[in-house]
Length: 431
Ligand SMILES: *Cc1c(COP(=O)(O)O)cnc(C)c1O
Picture (cartoon, rainbow, N blue to C red):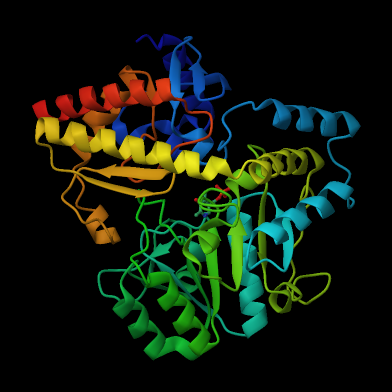
């Protein structure tokens, strides 16, 4: 496969932008390769600057659940843009979209639209702090909640040791208000609440962890989080930026039957345009300005073209609830293809899946916590990734990301992908 145009563009880009990209994982750094510059996409396929075609399982990191350039979505965006791309004033579309979100998402009684998942989480945490009058928050190691200061934190080795920022430029004083527990480990949560419970404003969790590879919640884990947060008057926030409108129309909270106090949404909700939202109980959302004292604003929030894309996407999902069963079945078919390939070559690996989200870890199972994830053999992942890409299968260039199955993947895509998985596992087994 030739990718000389991508190479030339990347060389130029590296002089102009940090790392040559506008978001780090796009740079293919973890796999030591040149990122493919994308020119266009349609349905389940994307095409790079050298004219190579790939079956896409990144889906813009989640949003493209209906496939790329879906006609109704593109048409809605064009129609909205022709009327004007931004007014900085309220519109009918925002009211309509808010109603759809509130109808679909169990915890949503009120909603605020923002421009990115990062902004949604940052704002939801502020609302929870304003509501409770408390400062501390709890997050889980390996869960990603965007790049705002207080959330770029993971635990040191000891559970209750001082928290260290994961990024340079985050003041230690900000990191100190974030306590970190182990995902799927009830004991670690209990210990934190026993010591700090009455000062904890919010506990935030990805109901299915999908930013350390996919790690589903153990049975009862989400219920446990619901119970302990209620006991301490702590706001439970589900970060559903990936799981929202993906596991079900109502997200993970519908899929697992556990209703948080607040949720953050992103990715799918913008139908591929920059948009996100936070929502929750009326009592908490009423704290947000101009109704309440918690300030949050946005020049482009509720942008008409983005709202049109989101609305068109959600309306299709509402009208076709069978999509959820179908993408779950496709996910299961791929899971089976991995199992077969693993058996064929006697390869040690662990497959995790929640609905249409899946990950293959090159380590023995079970993979239930960040520590399990960290055991993965990254050299094996690189070999696997390079082989898949050469076979025309575009997956995330990192062990710690999800594979996204969508409505546009068809039987032929799945068969080609299964054959590619077999070749890739053969290459990994050869070493
Ligand atoms: C992607 C993501 C975010 C951040 O969203 P951006 O739009 O990239 O700022 C936050 N939380 C989760 C769970 C995500 O997957």
